[in-house]
Image (cartoon, helix red, strand yellow):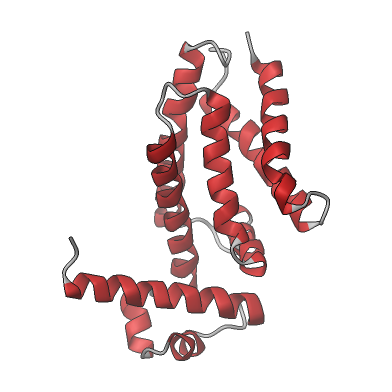
Length: 199
């Protein structure tokens, strides 16, 4: 149970992130200032800085929120003995919902996540590390169940499936795959890949 103080902090953080999503989508990442962001969120500039020192920190917060959302979806809908296809669908559909809530911001978010303007900081690398810590036990258990070959590196397996997800998102942005067909397309690609990875 959160205290009133904690609830206020959570709400302010949420207001800042929502304001950032609107402004980054409308004006662009580089063109948005912290001052404009504070005005959009209805709070003081100093308050924004008390939560996020830079705009990069705001983008990182979205990465962390996405990871928390994926963890929650997995906890509620699967366990390590759930078939690999189902677990991957839960992960990638959760990620897709997270980025597709606002199409323009989602585009920026993916660009910053995959092709950052700056070198990854220690904090960015920590978020990546947490993502792999989420995935690796899933792949290891799939190897034990003989759903994946045991001679495959976990990092390479992660790359295979994340590449499929990025392809699907790219096709969605290009209008090649409509939203309602995304789950079927994603599952088809996962199953086709698994057929080639089985022992």
